[in-house]
Length: 321
Image (cartoon, rainbow, N blue to C red; front, top):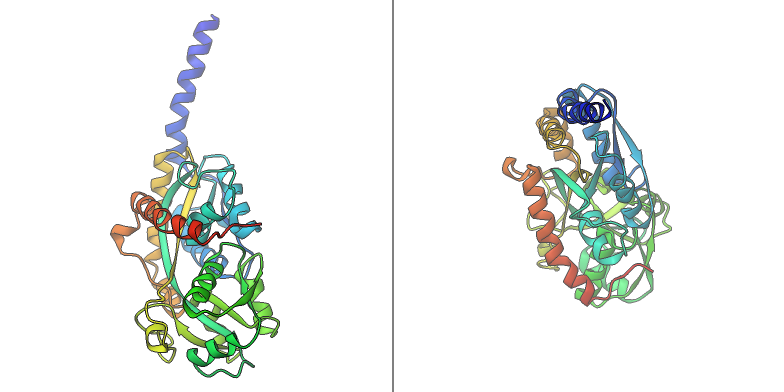
């Protein structure tokens, strides 16, 4: 009888896996954000949570797990059960740059399942409002005369790497102040405890429009439709300094393909929501084209970005200490 019982158990388990995928989800889904609340990754996740939850028929609950430039939050998602109930939002810094900067206890390509590419954001070169410079050339001149402090979302974050490239191109020197996310860094910029940030549009634009900080340039070749008065880096005297921070959704390795497909469809439906599209446009975010939003397309982009950026960071000796 024992062999028969064992066989029956194996068959029952094999049948249960497809059934789980078919009925998924039966409880709320946790969306891990690897940065502190209030920053661009957090804002993106919270904007997506409600429409994704509506598409899935279950709540999507945002959980902030911070530290080490986002690598701790990504690791939290990597080691979660591969059942579709823990997914994570990440971006260019957490899923590309961190692999070259930190000694990660996981593999960014092998230990995660891509789900969908999300909107991307150019960066803004912003400063505390009391800085006397009125344009980017004047800001560079002001920076050359002193030891300024630049806030970042952590070592290896998009803002940190952008600052390193800015130093290399312009010849200026400044100190970096790493935070657990761009949200806390922005609070100190608003409080005049920082001088400059290289920040995503979604985090900075509300404060620029309120007159609380100064904007000097947007890091792309065209101006923002929602803030056409901000010049491009090309117009401001820093041609080619184009940086866009793309974001995506990932699940733990081994998550069933049917569940990945359901999550991708839910993300697609969320990105089609008219109100969400309006919000993204106001924040200067660019939606990826439909053919870029598949799991395979995200995997291809991530690998290409790793091949591009890891050698550059290695050559610049950028490592977390």
